[in-house]
Length: 107
Image (cartoon, rainbow, N blue to C red; front, top):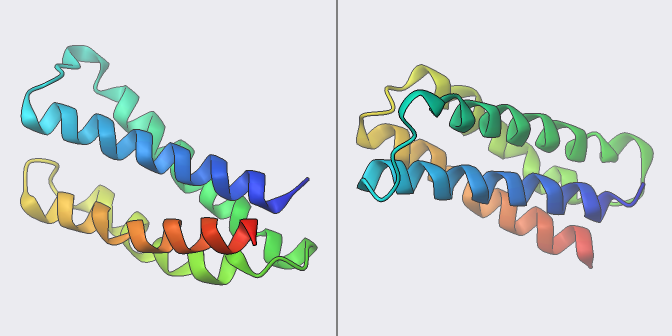
């Protein structure tokens, strides 16, 4: 498996989750009883990020080192109320790590 594909999948999942969260937060989209979709995207993002970071063990690609710090906000986010600004700020704190690792993975 090409590690770059894993970093692309993880970043895509992260962006989809951020987009859904932003749409719900601004009232553009109402998920109603389907709020679990946001949770499923979070689980997808965290899982794909973990798998992408694991490429450090089985490939020469070092992009996992750049994504590893994203684990901190990903671990903290479930403990922060989704109705607070801290939730948004914490979620966005992972963005630079996803972008940097994606760029590194494809180089």
